Image (cartoon, rainbow, N blue to C red; front, side, top):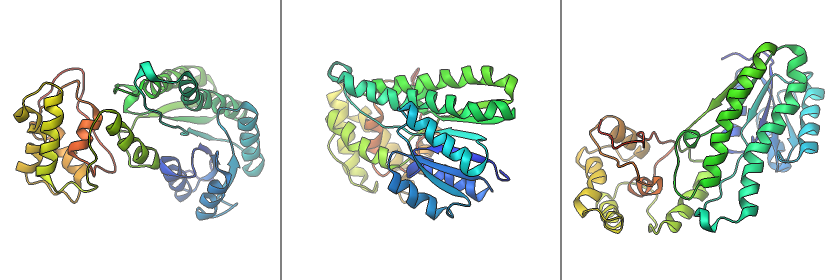
Length: 298
């Protein structure tokens, strides 16, 4: 990839996936605006990427229209253009829907959906006149699938898919492209916080950071399976597959990927993501899940 001086406005870029994207853009010859709610962290990230020549820090609450417009205008003033939007800023809030506080529901949707709308609108003021641009939205596996306790997040990520499709059609006549990225689990600060919270809410006990204790994970799998009305043998089957194949636990995320996609492992459609995490507690940096629409063997 060669960006040749193209200017990217990346939200939530002080850490996690956004920071990784900004770093890669700079390496490819692009210039980036690190847009983040935490201005100090954004400044530190920009300095790490080479300073004002290649990266600047701008403060932005993506749910605030005035702040978004000011941040995009500052980017255009510093670099002369805005060529790429990466709408990445996001949070996670986990509750059963009957216990979900309305204020928290609105907060999550405001950051994910209002943020994507406002940054898109602000960047198009520069992209349409120059007759070029790229809109990149950070979706999720939850743009296509669902998980318990994540009603707001799943709703937001599905919404981003719709916005992407709309902008692909609206932007076409201005040579502005729209795409969405839908990753699985990536071990960012957001996910680090999410895993123990969801495990607690589902009544799953804590697990070790490393996945080498197959017996312990099997006991936990059996326990959770019995709570869900399954036999202990069936519930422990997923972990058995990992143990029996003698997969290298130094790369447990790869172990899961191979187990789920290459070996004949049965994952039932209502299996919570957190239960899978309990079997592979050190899973990083990403997961690939089987389709949940039906029971699958591969």
